[in-house]
Structures are given as structure tokens and as C-alpha cells.
Length: 457
Image (cartoon, rainbow, N blue to C red):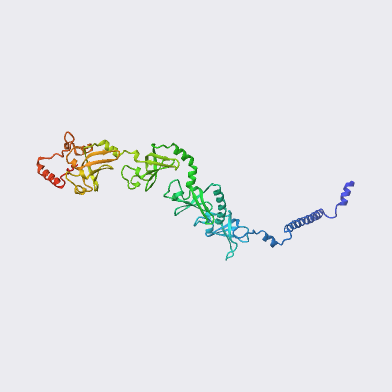
């Protein structure tokens, strides 16, 4: 045996090898256990040092947020019911947001406003109500934030935007963090009759009135549109010249006329420019949505107003009548009105002439009703046409003397009713009907001897 082997044998413990190995393992385990316990003690010491000498109760209280009524706090939505929402703001109990305090919109479903785990702001209404609850308001927190933003935007003369959430009497309500009122007259560049289609649309508006004490914000979309379209309007007005003929669409009808959208701005067709005929109300001539051709009468750059005419693009019935008729011609008409000095007779579409009382009969006439009645149809002779003054003078008494019948009546009664010179001679009369015809003529002469019988069509 070598010296090294002897040394190893001498150092080995007595007994079997398994016992030796077990003893060694046990010793190692004992040492390991002691080291683990020391680590745990070190960790506990660190925790105790973090409290800084505070009790555990004091340390818990120190984690609770501090706030007062009227403060704005942040929290996480932890529960949503039909009538309220619970918000964890780090207080000893969750805050309650009643459904009416969730949104500036009326009668909303809480599930449509917030979702679980949403982080939101809320204003503290009361730290403890009669039931011991912390009551919060999401919409009032929005109010506070929105007021600050809106005041800054108003000061900088900038634009505010938000969706239309409601139609109310006189206008619209916009959600701009608070309820902004947009009057109907300021919704568009022209008056809008039906506001319902705007609900849900997001509109950009200028702030024209702000009163925090009264919680009042008045908006104007028209002011925004006017500002953004000013350059376009200036160019449009500059290029628009009187006398131009333009196509447009009737955008609105009012008592004094109709507004026509020319594709950039609206122009007014006054009721007097709608038709050559007398118009009681513009709706008799045009309706909203009608496509019309109008003539530009005037462009007022300073007031940004355009005057238009519809009748200027139509045939002037007076000119048309004057072109187709002449003095001494016979025309057929209807008595429309009696006046002390005579009677007005309609002789064309929108054309009336005056039969002076001196031209009503060959004998003296005290009053027009002695000769004619309103609604009566009869032949009259044209004795004067004044196109510039739009006046026609007629005569019943001269019509009784005969004369040339206006061209439009010749086709109506047939060639047999006129002689070679175009004078009306009446319908052909059969010999068997001579007696009856004579009786008819006597009856007409007895009724109005100075007035010729109107020929039957």
C-alpha cells in the first residue's frame, strides 16, 4: 500500500459507506436550512424598515386619496348597472355615479357611456350622502373641463365642434363637453326648415355667446361657414355681372319671394320678379327644389346680396300681345272688374285693358254696371296700345260697328265667319233657320243693343 492510500484509509470514518454518505448529506442540509432562514429574516427587515415606524393601519390609511366636495378625481369603472356606475378612485369605498350624472345627453344607457375598466374623471358631489355613499358626477367633470377649453377657444376666436344630440324649440343642441345651443337661424347660410336630419352629424361652429353663470353657450355654424367661404363668395360675387342668365335651384320660398341657390350663393327673386302676371304668393309660381333659369338684376358687394329675376327670362306677355295685335282689331275678352270710370277686360294671359265709360255704349252711360257685369264675355275693339306704360284702351261701342278680328280667333271660328277683308260676318245661317236666327238677334239687341253678340266657338 502506498503512502497516499494509507492516508486515505486513515481519514475515512468508521462504519459502512452509506452511513458516511448520509451523514455528510444531512450536515449539508442543515447548513442550507440555516442560510434560507437568514434570507427570510433579511426580507422581513426590509419591509419593517419601509413602514418607517408606522403602524400597519396608519400605512393603509396613508394610501387612501384625499379630496373634498367639488374636486375632480380619476378612477376606474368597476361595475355598471342600469341606474348607476361604480368607480374605484382609491377611496375606502367605491364612488357611485347615478345614470343622470353620466352624460349631458338625456335618458342614456350607462353601458353606452362607459365600459368596465375605463379610466374616467368625475366631480365629487358629496363625500358621504345620507346613505353613506360617495356620490360622483362624470358629466359635471366634463362641464368643468369643457368650460376651460371653450373659454380659451372663444378668447382665440377659434372653432368648436361636436355632434348634434337633440332638436329643441328654436334650434339644435350640440355635445361640446357641455350642451351648446345652435339657433335654427344660424345652422346654415340660409334658413333651414327641417332640423331633424342634422341629428348625429358633427358640426363646426363659432362661439358667439358665453355665460358661465347661466351655463349658457350659443353657437353659430353660419358664422363658421361665412368665414370659411368668404374668399369663395368674394370671388363668386366679383365674377357675377348684372344681365347674366344663370341656372339655379329654389332653396326656400318666403312671403316676399324665393331664394335661388346659384351654386355658390343664394340670390333673391322678389315676388314682383317671379312672373309677368299678378302673384298672390310665391308658392303659386315655384316650389323648393325647382330648377329655374334666372337673370341677374343686381349684385351688392358690400351687403353680399344678389337680386334675381325669373320673369326676365320669360316671354313678356305684353310684348307678345303687342306683336300679335294692332289698333282697330277685335278681340274677345272677359270683364274682370268694374270701376267708377269703366271696366277692365282680360284680353290675354295676364293682359287686361280698360274700357272707359265713354266707350261702353253709343248712348250715355251713368255707371258701368248698366252695360256689363263681372265675368261677362264679349267682343271689344283695341283703340290704343301703350307698351311702355303697359296699358291697352278698349271700346265696346266701336266693337259693335264691326272691324277686323284678331288673327288668333280666325282659326277658332273658321274662314266662313269672315269676309275677304277679315271682318267678322258671323256663322253661315241656313234658310230654314232664318226665323229662329231673327228671334235670337232681337233678343240680343233688346238685352244690350250697343254690344255685338259674341260668336259661338
